[in-house]
Length: 342
Figure 1 (cartoon, helix red, strand yellow):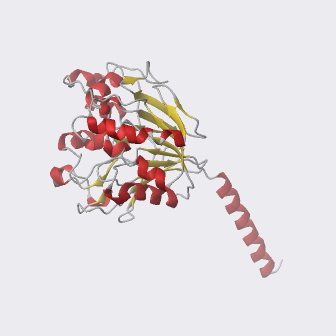
Figure 2: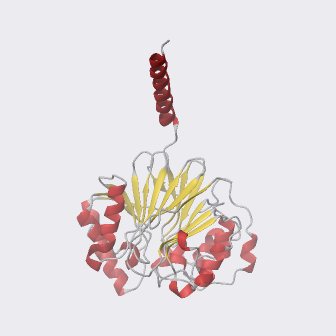
């Protein structure tokens, strides 16, 4: 065989091998933590190209938050968002929904049912959201129910003040952290009614409980842990002290946690410390530098998407594999770090 024939044969073999590898390599779950300045908006894109947006950020600001969501959706090459899940009806979570609906196609709205808070501003925002429902499909999720996603499982853990009636498979053991938890105040706001979900992708488990406050956290986790553990935790309530009890965070034992805080919203020192000190935590990332927390209650700048207090709009992107590998990227500086499964 001539040298030219050998080179051609080698090229064909390499091309065939790369094609087989590309075909067999697992497709990732992509997650965009969009900066909505202390609100929440998290976009999931599954390997089957289904999309789920959890919350829509604030209204007004010339459509700032809706524009940032659309930018992330276009980066993910989406033509519509299949599901928009609203955890609860506070303005920083549902307020951006009308402006988003003007800019991008929505398939289905998902929520916990009617507003349950006696507040004029919350009634106003819920009324604006309700006007969107006839223009798309609408689902109400109860604890224990889920969404028809391919290759990814979503199960509601909490909603409308209730929680799953019994432990998930493999969970249900006594939670010793409950003994040291002080009795938290009753929360009658929409925070305590948050639609909280568990998303499972292969070996990977992701928990997002919206703004669920401590009393409802303890009902879910005490005296027995009904959830088990999580690999990726979306820090509840932007890192405010009213949430993130040790009985929840430490029992979940997350490997990676991401905090949707703003420069002057969330990232409270006590809640930050609880997450930071969680046993087994390998990485804590923040959407903003928490100005009021000081250097001692912020992670290294490389792991903060927005550091100067301005409306920069930098996001955090997670690329996750079914073997549990989590890779986190900071869009501000392209700093990237991977976390292997336990």
